Length: 52
Image (cartoon, rainbow, N blue to C red; front, side, top):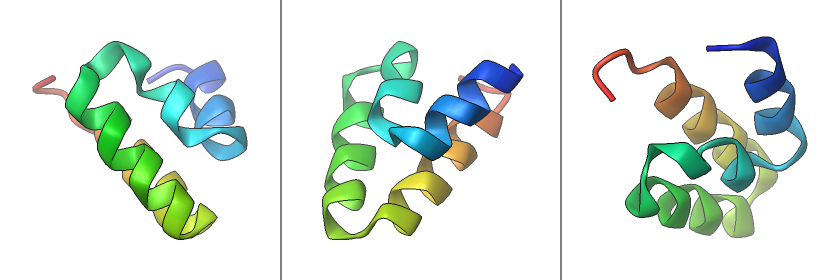
């Protein structure tokens, strides 16, 4: 997880997970629409997952 992805996850979470697949982007986008904090948390969790 690079520092640029973390900064991007804080500013605009769906754009940070664009390389992790369409499902991740959709989930983070929906969570960001529901509230900015859940979107940021989901993006950071997805970015921190070493299996993907």
